[in-house]
Image (cartoon, rainbow, N blue to C red; front, side):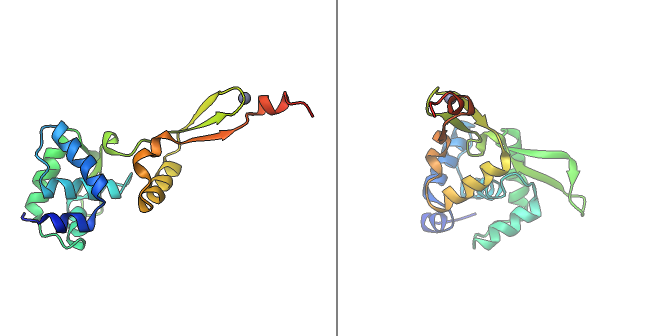
Length: 164
Ligand SMILES: [Zn+2]
């Protein structure tokens, strides 16, 4: 697949591209356009898995030309280096394998409630909340530091101990 730098940056966020490039390199894979696009499409699907055909359709929507054979090959590579996962026991209605992005590639998935008074912290691990927050943050170019979120509230114990 041949793709100019401009085409690459039109469809995806440049900062996220940088993050994906780094992850591919860390796993010994050269960040080719096909690899970056496929990871990006899996990442955009967040926690839902996609068949190779579906990945192919999504990439075509971005105006990128790539063959289905390339998609299959790259998906295998990504699975081998654990950047993507194949759902072994799940197939779509046509009996095709489904793929999803590995947890390591997903944006950080925990936020914390922090008590202003006693500094106690409770991790909020809610996938749906995380997905929603990430989508909104991404749309507004705020996702890179999203993991540092903590929600400052006063815990019930500290509220109970406050003078009336
Ligand atoms: Zn407290």
